[in-house]
Length: 197
Picture (cartoon, rainbow, N blue to C red):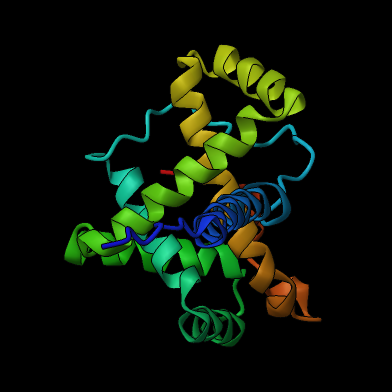
């Protein structure tokens, strides 16, 4: 009986190598797009997170910020806040802040999935800030001014940036021609990244 030679198909093993390489390249491209092309950080500004309070998970300020994030994350909800602010003749940020404080007082923190999304966004912004020399210098300066640790100031600044980025989408549409009806005191104590008590 004559033995039949066994041939190894090297072509199919190369296909797996190509597919693996393409998958890794795709993952690297996605991460690059997610962290470098989306939500680019603006230039650092002086008013960023000018708050000497730790925004920890159990603080009232944190709860209010999560409620703001939740409202701003849903377009219809945010649009209704814009309309209500126009009808009341007050600034969008002030009305958003009032609603978020009210929700926190009545309900406490939102559901865990909202908190998880907010925390994920905070981590993304912290990563982006760490990749910018200008942001690192700005945050270090703010940490010294506010007498906070660098990590706490980085977290505060990330929260401020997330909310400012979302607020900017609706702020322009909320402007009204008759600015005389805005409360000037509320304008001075305007949302500066965090609620004023």
